[in-house]
Image (tube, rainbow, N blue to C red; front, side, top):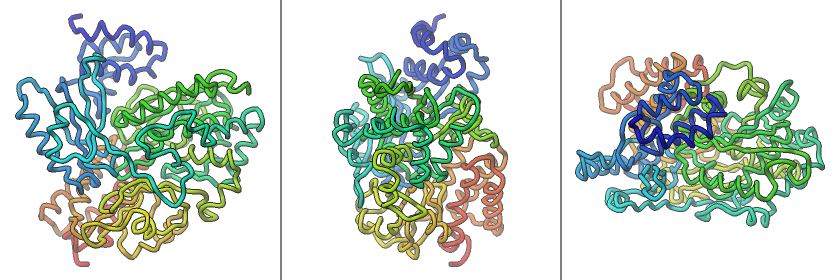
Length: 582
């Protein structure tokens, strides 16, 4: 065994070997942190230790964007070039970084520069993820840099990384009260602001059934995009036969324009943990997984620290606060796959497989992680559940509308004065969000608004007075989705925006189902050609056919929404796209 990384793997493999195949992704990530890539000898050692076929190990590595079997530079710079960062000059930063890396040391590959899909830093772009060798730690470490320009690359290549603070505002300050300070609130700070009051109120004093009834009465809908009633999900898992039961926090936020979960994790991780503890108690789960996307190094570090704080204070572990309830939370990190935000693909990832979505039914509440009853909740959903169980369903319903209850977090990026995260009650208008809270449009008049993230739909100025609620947006034929609002002024070329959105879906399609695998590629090819001025007579019909085929026949939400933004833009502005007359 000549590979020096193999001997270094011994303590890592000893730790993950008892997990079997479920330990595959953590083992690969830990091994790659030692040398920057996964050599054949390392792969073989991991395969033997975990009892996983070597071909499956290779298949997992090749599926995830952050894993590689090829040697990389001592620094790996991944520059986001998706729409929000593109508006800030991402293409120029990427070209300058590549030129700088080539000039510095082509022979020794001192720096590898890659184009990245969205990094969840849409409010502070141009953004980059940096994987750099840390000699003191003897491993590669990840960090992020924001507000990059070609002139700021000198400092970045010299080892300096500066990440800007997130702007957090809005009409309300309920779940964001401790966010936007450039650091994570400690457990003591969280408790001083009323945190952990829900646990003290619930554990040992309310039955799981009473907890679920209160969540149902609040009308809390999932905040991850699907808007499924949280109380019904908890009730279904609680009543499902068999066990053990699992609780999963979905923090694999990867959609362009969306960064709310990151802000919560980086600013107030204890609030999310309290929500997970309450949810696990309600369904009878004693093991929870906190799945965080791998491109969020700051969030990963702060969540892990918060878990240790909670464990030391008696909020995690055995017999929590003397209630007789036991719970352990384990952090799992993604490895670069947007599809793992889909709940069943997330299960596959935790189980040590490629992140392919499963066919439903059966549904996760009866057959989820490891085939057992499982609840998956989004980060924001759990933060809201804490408010419901601390203050009561009636207090929660004071905010919002009868059908869209409670406060909501909105991510605003693009051509606005103050890109940031805004907390407001359901029912405020788009105009209020963009003009009053985010400061209005910069660089010209308003041309377009992308509502709901990359999987959302476009609207024009006529939609400014639409209220942001599930029912009002549905009536306007618009989705809420991830509650991302991206603004484009009149100087922007919408053809370029569509190409970037199409590239995102083509890059992130897992390839399991044919409509999405082929459809996303063809959509990207046609839009790239159209943006270059090569428009053909059948392009409109082809794009419509591709879009609706993906919508109607794809296996999961990625393919079902991969054409929605394109279809909406074609309907609104065919002339601007070179596909017809306005």
